[in-house]
Image 1 (cartoon, one colour):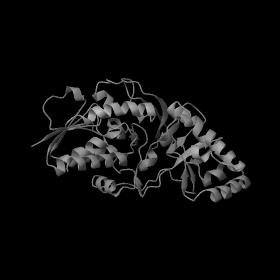
Image 2: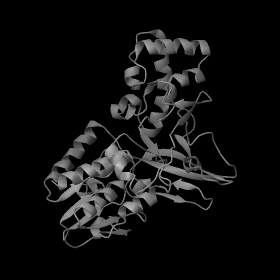
Image 3: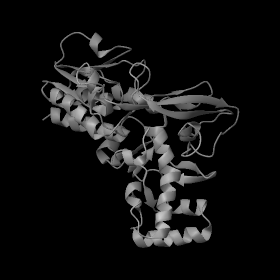
Length: 368
C-alpha cells in the first residue's frame, strides 16, 4: 500500500489526506509543527464557555456546491451571516460602504442625492473597487469617493498592509469594495455560517479515518522514511531552505481581553479605520451565541512577519513577490511526487472554501 506524507493539519492538508485515505485506500501520515490541528482555523472553548478563534475570526462562506457538500459531511452549520461594523467619524455603520451607510454618516438630503446618482451611474448590487470608484466625473460622486477612500480605506490599509491602497495589489483593495446595495452582509455567498461544534472539531472529523495518523509538534525535516507522495502545505520558500530569499508576509497579533459584561460591543467585528493602532476588535461569543456572564474580545494589530517571531498570515501580492514565488514554483514543478498547496504552499490568499476547493482539485489531478 502506498504511503503519503501530508505536511500541515489545516483545512488544505486535512482535506487532501481524507480524500487520499478514503478514495485511494492509501496510508497517510499528517504532521504539523503546531501543537494542534486545524491550522489558523483552530478554535477552543475557554474557561468562560466561549469558543475562541485563536487566529482571528473565521466565517465559512461559499458558493461552491462541491466544497459545501464535502464540508457538510463533517459538521452542521448555524445560520450566522457575517456583518462588519466600522466606526466612521464616531458613528457605527456597516461596511462595505453601501447605500445604508450613506444614511448613517451623511445628512438625509445629501444621502438621498448621492443614492440617486449612484443608482444612475452603477448597476444595483454591483461591487465597485475603491480605486475604480475614484474615477468619477460628477462632483458629488467625487466627494463620496474621496470620503470613502480616506475614512474607510486609506488609514485602515496603512495599518493592515503598511502601504496606502494605491500601493497594494488590486486583488486586495477589491476585497472591500463600495457596494451599490442595501445588503449589509459582508458576504453574499449562498452558504455561510459557523460549524456548530467549531472548526477544530470539524478538522478532527475530517482526519478521523483508519488510514490516517496524525503527529503534532514535529517538523517536516525531522521525518524520516520513504513516502510515495508528499503533500506540502507549509511555506514553499522554507521547503527549499530559502535559496532565493524569503517570501514576504504580513502577520497579525491578537491581544485577548476578558470583560465582566455580557457584551463588549454591538457586533462580532468592529473595524477602526481611522482610530487607534489596532485594525479591529473581535467579540467571539456572537458566532455561536455562547452563554456566559463574561465576554472575550481580541484587539487585532497588523505587523510585518518575522521568521521565528510570529505567524505568516497574508501573502503580500506584489509583482516582485510573485516573481520570487515563481522561482520556487519552477523548482517545485521539477520534483516527482511532491505537491504544494494551501496559502503557504501556493503563496496565495485563500478563504477556507478556496483552500478546500484547491485540495479537492489537486486530488482529482493526482487521481487521474
